Image (cartoon, rainbow, N blue to C red; front, side):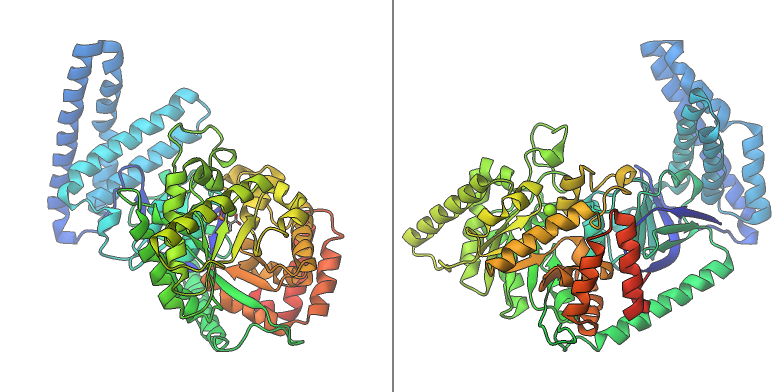
Length: 578
Ligand code: PEP
Ligand code: MG
């Protein structure tokens, strides 16, 4: 058994068989073979080794002809490893004595070799690890042949283990079969993490390298509450986690009882609890939890995996579906936040994409793209309670430009006689520190604000939200971030401008009392977080929360603040403290 500590990004527990996604995505379909099939399986292994040997020889000859012996030597080394009698003996005994399938034996043995190479302190030997992995892949390709299974064609439940998953790969995971995932890289605020939460799949990212320690088919546990990945767990651990999963289920059932009740504090202050969505089908997840509406619709996900750029009708259709399903409740449509780690849109690969042509900057620079979306939003505004929000506003000029484009598109629609809501509420995300510093001006020019703590944290602390190496610094509980949030909420409340927090922070039970105490009355959260946040709201008084916020703001660092907030949450609802 091996335990890896990563970053918990999507809660819940999953126990199942590993599907190891290296760049070729092999999956070992069976771990064991029947006793009477051993001889046949040994023959299969023999055939695979000999076929792989022929392939390597062909490659060696081709490279030798073109480039000479020096370059062909690498293939000679591969051949030597492949035909090493010690390897052959080890594989044979795994199949004969432990009844491993040849695929599983190959994967286990070669990954163990690769691991040894990786751990020795020699750059030359460390590089040999990739040669070993190369041989493993070649043998697996020969063994699995057409039976190779891919992520797109799963037929049984798996836990996906990968070096990295992009937001679009994550969005396309098959929820019926993918029970959880873990990646070697990735940070707490990455969009991969956000999509995982939206899909309600337990997930851990940023574990560091571990793929050489695991083979497809191995038993794995993903503990998305504590950020743990457990490889080849013992029986006791499996039993513990199966119990934990049952507990989670029964807690969720208990919270379901809150569905029809309002999010109202014990002293009768009504709190608006909205859902964040990436895809129209998630409206259902919001309604199941009794959301008051959609506080953030991340429309850039329309571009994920799309073969061509979505046109006005594609946008309109998606918005209409959301509006229809949400049955009269408000929907905040955010204009596309393309770029950075979501959907690459920058023709020139930016060296620093989060500071580059992203989000509203990209929309303002690519007006045809922006106008297409605005036309669709406006058309949809005649169907329900639609509100429009601009992301990543950093300057007043940007906001004004965006509003001018909107006014222009409205004039076009008027001329064409197309129906829309001329009084469409227009708001902005507060997620760049400059916007907070100028918030007293912004509140005069918008109908509402939404604080995006995911980006606000990254820009305030200069800590990439997707980078595990700075995950310790990237914390929305940092006192500097809390001051920014307080400034934005105060300015909005003074002018009676509705303000919301839609970053991941607002869905984390740890911060609910703090945010209520800072004067927040609207939360927009991942749908699965709605019941817990509602439970907290219904347990506390505003006065109690104010005291918590006041005390938290006197503390000097994120660790102390989190530990204080954990203690306070433990006092009122211990079951919500992970
Ligand atoms: C945020 O930055 O907090 C936010 C909600 O936007 P996104 O996560 O989509 O960047
Ligand atoms: Mg953001």
